[in-house]
Length: 265
Image 1 (tube, one colour):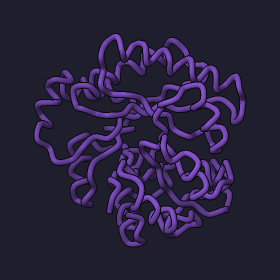
Image 2 (spheres, one colour; image 1 turned 90 degrees about the vertical axis):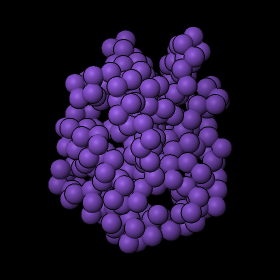
Image 3 (cartoon, rainbow, N blue to C red; image 1 turned 135 degrees about the horizontal axis):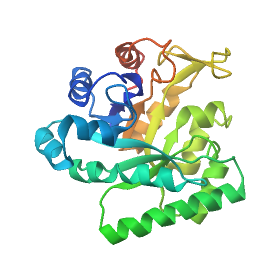
Image 4 (cartoon, rainbow, N blue to C red; image 1 turned 180 degrees about the vertical axis):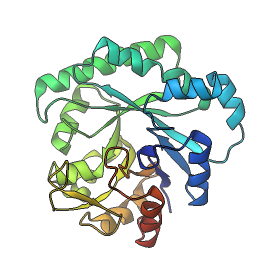
């Protein structure tokens, strides 16, 4: 097995950090992707209240076997506001102290829209200037969520912001972009640093024209993608069980067990 196994804490939003790490360890994962903790997605505020400073948390977690692969922010690259950028920057000291390699951001905007791509590239340039000035080690990765739901759009954006890490949400490009995951992988493989995986069926749900299912119990073609990833990818593959946004979903433990049972790992 080549890739690293992780899960997004969208699936366990009520847990604190140390309980999250214990849960991941119980399921044999390599690390975690932090989106929500203790009922909030304002991770910097929660971590400050719980641990005081980034340095104090780093001491607390020193020597821990599991890795924090990402801190997930709410910044949208397309037409980001000053308030969004300020909120995003609050994540940086925590990522730096904990050695977190990536800060997740969204794309935003509209698919295939040149103005969206330019706005996204401008935000990347803003970030890169700050990162170079402060010599930060952490970097951003952009999730294929809105504008970047097709490989053509992803490549169009990357032409303006080369070297940007891509968090490939395999479900979005498959369900919204209507692309075969293997075709998407072949097109964007050199740029992918992190993946999201999840499953669904084509039955309208409360919020989407599809309904989420446990991994391996829906229509997502994971088996052929898994084999390619095992051979060609060394980064994190993250189970995104969106219980924070979809409280009707069962506990994340059920999703993690299903992922193992159906061979998603």
